[in-house]
Image (cartoon, one colour):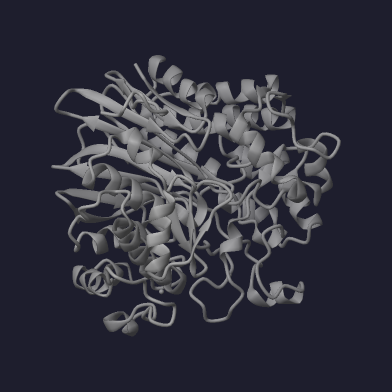
Length: 536
């Protein structure tokens, strides 16, 4: 139990239902749907739709979606990939002819056809109880009537003025006199409200065909994109159920979506650390952080070499998750010193050499349905390109592609890019015990594994495990949050890491622990964002 003398907050408890999101309005929208007879899937979509309005830098209907879902009474984890594909004309040759030598995050060429609405409809049709016409009402109200800009949203918005200023439509709609909306000011989006009303009435066709799709395509073509209305029409069916991947870990089984997402790298980090004894110094010790950094460096190395769209490239998931391989990785970690970049073995060393390479929320309802849900524009406001008539901000997931011929993640027609957003699910004895996730771009495999080890290995409660200070390896250095004590940072530097303070904290997480012994739900939500977990 936490020390009540110190700043912080308790985990949320409930018995009939629980939602944990990065915005209070989204959490309330989820609980309203649960109380109105909807299930966890309905509530998750409702919450996400609200966030697409009130957290516009982080997510939107012009983005992508992934989901893990365990129906009540089932031991089967259902996985959905709702990531979009590149336009049919997207080839390395076409992009080079347009003057690109690498992907540009604000270019129309970094826009893949959004997959979120395709995902929402498929999930709702397959696993929901209420229709989209009911589920989207809260989001429509916030778009029409406005919302008060909250602290983290205001901070993110202010940091993205430069990007929004690059595009006249985005500057008109999302800036006032060239500045981001002030903290607490009301922001309305009538164009987005109309689009949401159309989706509520007509489903995904209202997004992928007709006026909305025509506006998105015209906007992208005017910005130099290769997109066509036929690409968007095909995108209506891009979402698909896929077979999840998992690893046995500490008497449980941790599930992730398969590639093109980075979920397998969460499993690699956990599998590597599972070969090492728990450090006696606890979760905040230099040794714990050091081992985690080193395990992550191996995983991110393999990510950059192998991760791509498995429908077009052979991604060696089984080899990367092989127990012997992960044991060898663990054996390469030294407790006294960090490996230099030169010492870090090449990606896929050993038998792998023979083979080729956000907002997060969760809901659990009274029946036991458990939903782990993530939706994102990737970087803040995506490309910054707004389809103004439709009110749709367009993501930049295609920035994850490369133009390098022969690379597994080279852009190609109708190909999915490397994807960073990953929902997580923990199962034990054939039952869901925790939907969880930690958003934050490239940080997510590190964030997932830090959270899980904080809770299940070091015994922190759900909220404490989310709150705990974070770090991650990046570009040869280690980006540390201010919450890590200077003495620990000094020890890491002496081991050979090069630590630097990060400007903004790493990611933002949510989790709900299903306490079957006591018959209650225990939720946590990240103080790095504006949200909360609530149960009833």
